[in-house]
Image: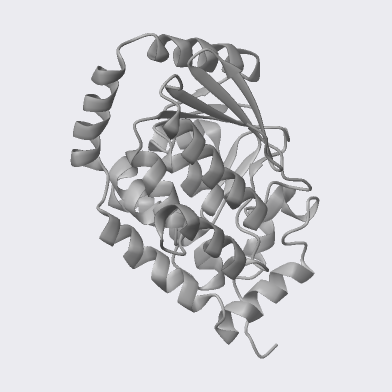
Length: 277
């Protein structure tokens, strides 16, 4: 498997996938195109049982979507699901026979968070992992599944806190809230995930498929609910008030590598923003 924004290593029944989309792993059309191709190829290869997603960038797992290329990356997602929506692409991954694990170091915000939420399991480095759903800071609903996943994982109150605050949450608090399975030290993380992935891959595929099917029937929202979140996000992206807030954030370093190291603070500066200022 050869990709532009993914580096793939096959280790038996486990496929280790490094996300490598510099300068800060934004979700754009090239990364979505590669994810679509990866999923299609892995699902077609019955020898592959588990996917482990990592980042080649220690500071950013997946930042968020590239807000300048929303139409373009949505069109790439349609090549898998028939619908221009990364929400449905991510849900497809959740429903897949493949077992998916996110090994998280660095920042994972907005659609990046929604990507790891779509994975079956999430393990994060205690020292570096940062989580956030930033969309409400721009007047938008998270469009790729955050509401569906976070309410089920955290409960209503914590899900509202996370989304309405649009703030950064470290790995310790993310673990306590249920955002991730476990927070581990950076020195333990890779070995733990590798061992777990191979352990899972060593058990019968039929059992894994049945377990995922039943768990998804209980806990994974139907396609229609993901579409109800995705459509308003796409429709609101071009609204003047949303674009005004995006431009104000850009002036403060949004969508730059250095500016997003402390994005929670940057977005806090938008709290009193008015589009006519």
